[in-house]
Image (cartoon, rainbow, N blue to C red):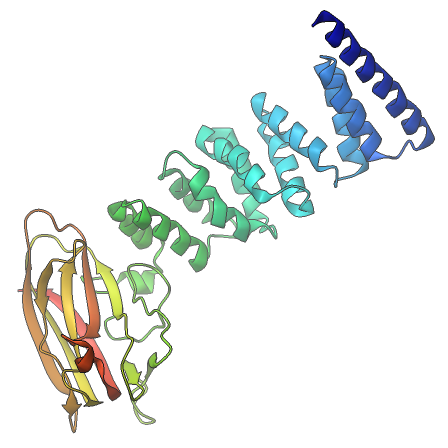
Length: 354
């Protein structure tokens, strides 16, 4: 064993000398500096390794190993500005997969204070890797509430979180079953004009296109069904929900929105205009997260000459239903009742205490 160790040390020393000769021949080579740094580390000289790695990164920002080495060592020493700098270098150069850079950035966020502020500074510059960051960072955090502070701090910069970034965090929380925190985040970042109308039901007049938030309308794409928020007519600029069905069997997963109603009695009201041809058409339904139905409208089909009103009452129980879902879906009870064609409009949906 001792003999093998001597052979390894001898081999490392030979490689070091070769790397030094190569560096003399090409003193601008970042690769040769990086090799010297790796060999110095194997020989137990952290100080020489650090000097060589700094030189490697200085001569070539594409020396990913050197930049990664410097990032992780700086983080170990709580040198957050340096660690953030090399994280930015790695993400901009693409020399390593972003997955390897996210854990150090997550540690900086969770260290709070100076570490978190360095991440905020990076993101406030709106770097090209920012979408990648928000796509990967959440699964590298041990505390799901940490990103809220980051998003709040970014709000004070020239590059606040955009809708897509906010939605990504809300959906992450929803998937982790932190629905109450997701709802709080949504309210915190709603524009003032929307916050005024954020009651029991959001965007019930369909005046705004869905934002992608779980607390706004969810409209999954469907091949044979068209869903849009459109003006009622050329003379009426008010928008309404329009759902159109092609002839044949409808494959319609529904249009839905998450609600956070406290226990009590409620009434859902709305208006509709129909030109549907089918056995049962569509219906609105309120249910708990476990799919327990709390209330539903009558099924709607046929032709209405003008806008008609509909409503139904429902109750949220004291226990077991902190989160609800309002959904428009098919009223079909069998495959034969899924045959549907035509269109239907909905507008002025609201939920009020009963």
